[in-house]
Image (cartoon, rainbow, N blue to C red; front, side):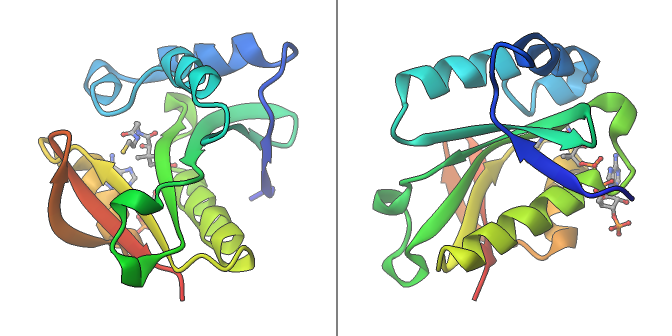
Length: 156
Ligand SMILES: CC(C)(COP(=O)(O)OP(=O)(O)OC[C@H]1O[C@@H](n2cnc3c(N)ncnc32)[C@H](O)[C@@H]1OP(=O)(O)O)[C@@H](O)C(=O)NCCC(=O)NCCS
């Protein structure tokens, strides 16, 4: 597999990034906000949001957004933490290992930055993406946030 990279969302790739959301199935659209909505949230949370397009070479294939300052909501033992606010891989590119590679890249970023944990919350109505995260090594904290299950991955 070619290596993936995170790129800023700019005027050049904005349309391509928002169109990625159109490639998800209706069921998947219920699990993750549209990229347009995420970018609007990033705009009004400029100091906290880290939105990035995921590229395979020259091609945008997904989108992530981190919350950079989640610590108020994270148990002290797991701080400083990273929070994965959004993750999506475009429909035609799913099942090729890209989602797992993105998690590897985020864990590595967290390690370099001295973070202790990677947190996220996800819907549990369907087996995916919950199983995807548990397969990767995330632990179910047993806590709920906004009707979603809170999961964590130990970076240490
Ligand atoms: C969840 C998502 C990010 C996974 O990305 P992906 O690139 O398709 O996943 P990968 O190809 O890296 O697969 C990683 C593992 O998950 C498993 N997996 C992926 N899709 C699966 C599916 N539909 N059913 C069962 N297992 C699946 C793979 O078998 C693989 O396991 P392995 O490492 O044991 O082989 C992607 O499907 C997606 O964007 N879904 C819609 C949006 C969403 O739900 N985002 C998460 C919001 S919390």
